[in-house]
Image (cartoon, rainbow, N blue to C red; front, side, top):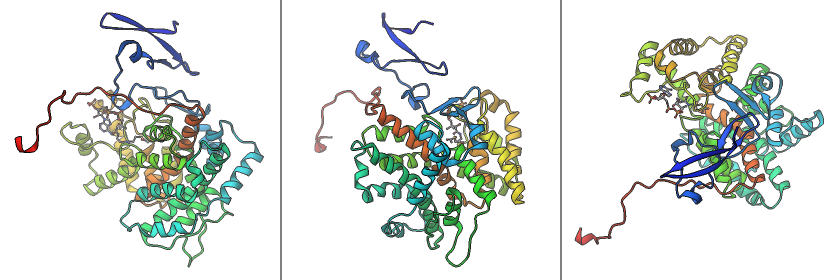
Length: 428
Ligand code: ACO
């Protein structure tokens, strides 16, 4: 294969280098095109634009493949643990037994947050969405750890910031929930594993003894693994672009949390359950809602369906669907919403509209059902996603800084007014 692409612009031919990835993905490097020809490329939503060369996650949407650092998601979800996967994503390699123990110990040591965070939390009304609270608390970390705002200073400082945020996110997430329901916050317990500690802080109360159900803790661990990274998605790209201005890790992660919040991204898991409940309340007529989703004059979309890159199936959705059955069975939960979800999936997979557009259930279609069965309230679903995605964001931010990538700054095609004379207000 030639490693040069040629482009003809107004009769002039320009040669552009072709780059090949380790999985034989092909990209045309257009970075010098404007300098040579004056032309830029345009691609709203970056549907066909690579923003970086990355060694973290490989994804093949056509073949339904997802691998973190080369390891298939199916193997990691079945055999690994969330903290092991976090270590893998952030450092590039699986830890040895000693390295994992050391990492777990470090994370356990940093779960507590400064008492003044309680004052910040108190300032939020109970109407606050936990995602807004979470992103605010993460940004607030910069005030408590001022050295973290200058990550260029030392990698030791960056590594400490990384451990701190992995340790404190569950505390912030659980406290955001406690604030919402008006219950006293629970302090972290370092004798518990990552997910059991989170559940304890979410559901524990000072007046009663709480022990996390291992079925629930294991299911949460698996869900966090499935969400841990997804290459250059909306929130990861946000983290990278904010970090490219040399903003701190915490500031960049907080931006990622906000990007994740929207219903077209991580907010879809909440939107799916709200949609399924709406369908149920409306009598459960699946076909009626399918027709609405297909009607171009109706803004309704089938939430949890479709994906920017998966055009065959989302491998995470397959694992989650199976896990939903297992978890609901183990906990003895009967959820009529699960039946509506299965009915919708069945109809959609045979419908020409969905087949032609390659719209399949994505990771969020079944994750909300599991979270519900596990007792996680709907408004916390996207927070759960953020907890899982954290190591991916960190890995993306770290890679961007290690590679000394330039500040992210796209160009545009201007379509506004051409130059015109200002007319003072009394003459208009
Ligand atoms: N329901 C009905 N029609 C849909 C849906 C849907 N869920 N998703 C896409 N379509 C249609 C579009 O109307 C469009 O039709 P057209 O070609 O006739 O105009 C076509 O399929 C392509 O859709 P786009 O919006 O152009 O695809 P894009 O790649 O930009 O969007 C997205 C992907 C945002 C995920 C979209 O499928 C969607 O809105 N899904 C519902 C929200 C959702 O589940 N988001 C979670 C994504 S996973 C994640 O972030 C973790």
